[in-house]
Length: 263
Length: 311
Image (spheres, each protein chain N blue to C red):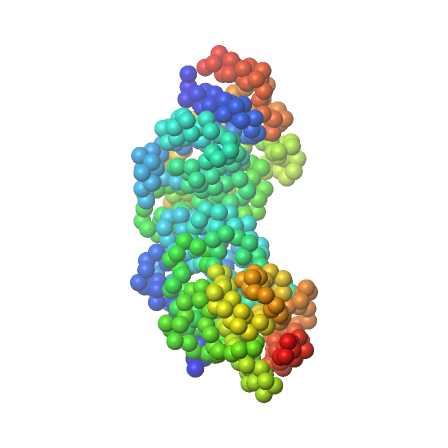
């Protein structure tokens, strides 16, 4: 079974157990997070070394995906993962800095990229090699603070910064484009002095190829990852009801069965 | 007496510390750019004029704090503190990060520019956030000394720089973060004052003395954490207190004083602050002070109409 399938099963399990929300947003970002964590130096992250790579999941409502990925890479134990959403757990419905190896708490959208800009400036100032990876949602790109940050990232030529947009094209209640169109995001990146790319957001190879190719960049990188909300579970794909609805026992069993059959 | 402006002192302090501490980094929102050029030249890679984007300047500073630098954010008070409130709350306070915000445009300092540039609810806003320190240094040496005490700690420290100074010079050893400064001992009235109005409070004390008031004056440069012990002991003795602050009457220093003295029996409290209104009109700073009663005569009048010496 592929690592992405394993991660999806973990996400389904903890969200089903806890009757939590945001399953669709978590399933769409799996390959993006998996690609990032496959290229970073995990030992440096575990030891919190100053020159480690930094990962910020700015779309903090996909916390289940980040935690499942951390678990997959040995940065979180199984016991902790299974406390997701429980009283007194460190794992809540949005990403928290209280969790080992998590850089920054997110959940209020439009914060992560600006924090990432600051980290990138600081690392450069200290002549440290770490890169900063910020994952946003497409709906999150409506936040004005992101555009302030993109302006600055391009202006300051932050080659150690990479923003990846999980472009699943659905917001909380419907298509993102119905609120405000985000067409040609990669062109918008380019206009801000950022190297813009479009990839299949469910192809880890396409993502990692760009991450490797741009590792010594002198400009920031913006990767629009075209994804499917609810990816991997056919009855959840493109169906926005799964933004909030937790899978019941029947839906959970069907989803697990499908993932195991497909992989 | 120094004629140096508070803003120039800020630039001088940054330069001096920046040359010794390579973790100090300064971000400005397109103000004070020229006076900070000595810092920029002496500390390459640690000065950024990032333009007009207040939410981002705060989050960016949080990112710098995350990589163990000591960020200083500097621009006009309302835009940073009111527009960027969520960034302060979540990116600094919630995540327990240290940082420094140095504002200009205290209260109605930008009197001629109007209410868009005023900020007189900052104490109230910032007091609601855990892990904040609120400082109101109103002389150049106070700023320099308090900044050196606080800038490396893991609180989000806000320094409200006024355009006016109170012109008093304290012994450096008497300027301590979180501690009040007793200007004068007294027995039947306490004046607690913050900001440049220490000057008029001291001037009023002369007139009050002639009317039989033996006034104790406490100067507060640290709004949070407040020196509750000094406040409590003084009012327990005098049983009457007037709090003077260029802030909305709700949520500011006066409210903190009331909380500190809740266990004292039979005290009388009055406040000389900004009532529940916008300070409209486009006069000078002094025009607004005259209108609102921030004058020597305003203080005397407030005390003589509010308190009875015999009660």
